[in-house]
Image (cartoon, rainbow, N blue to C red; front, side, top):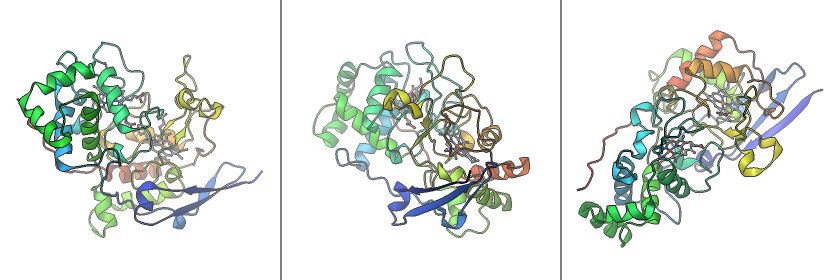
Length: 344
Ligand code: HEC
Ligand code: HEC
């Protein structure tokens, strides 16, 4: 049976510059498929972060949030900060399959990157946080074991923080404004100026021929762009890609939030920016190398009754998979980064 489907994508980042994208895919009985690549999004420029109406971005607030993100005094024990699992040099992740929380328990899901989180529509692998501020508050308690009320008092007693909170919020530190400050900082953690972006802007020496071919495969034969839409290379949606298929105790993923059967073991599409440095991969951290991860996707994933019909076996050759990897490696940005000086 011939199946035709049209998928329309409102890409936050691209619609911001006024380009609406409509992509047509056809799938035939052999599972092979073609995508009208010429209609696919090609430009991946990210908009300047604006924050939200409730929590607008200001330079001072970002600087304050940055200090808090790196400050171990944010935790109950003084031993952990947000950085303890989100390291800049590891693509704002931690290099572990699964990592240990402050209470000694092991996270059930792999640490995701902080790059481009400001552009997402919901947070966590299952999207259970509707706001970034909500996510920050939950991580503060759950990951680093901070008691927001007690820690706010600790921060209020540090003169360097007291002055900054007064100036930014007109109030002493409290659970709400601490989360707000960190959230604005997160909006500014952007992977956006990579060799691939320079190539798109016309720098003819920015990337290799393999990377260029890899991009054509990414938006064409590989069908990756259906879910990994530029500029973030994520459409912020949830799909089951078969990773829980052979597990005894399954992580139900998005189902826990939506209660829809089709969301069983569905997880958020991650950004692919700076993907070359944030290994291991997937919500369970089960795949160590980028090449293996791309191969898994290109082969259509493990069989699962709830697997997304959008993920199919693409019949890409090993050589083609290497080219897609070469393209993905060009998405690593080399933006400037300096650690904050923490107030006394
Ligand atoms: C012990 C490791 C650890 C620490 C420390 C940690 N995180 Fe995380 N972070 C995780 C894990 C694991 C997830 C994914 C959890 C899930 O999806 O269920 C996550 C997810 C997130 C997300 C969602 C990203 C997305 O793509 O949706 C944000 C934002 C975040 N953390 C911010 C923070 C902040 C802010 C702090 C400090 C208050 C912090 N994290 C401390 C491990 C950690
Ligand atoms: C149907 C939507 C869909 C398609 C098509 C798709 N992906 Fe994904 N991709 C996802 C989702 C969802 C995840 C995360 C799933 C999880 O961890 O359970 C993911 C994860 C990844 C990861 C790991 C990212 C990380 O941070 O852990 C890579 C790499 C990746 N995809 C590359 C590709 C490539 C290359 C293609 C094309 C060959 C592709 N994807 C096609 C939805 C898709």
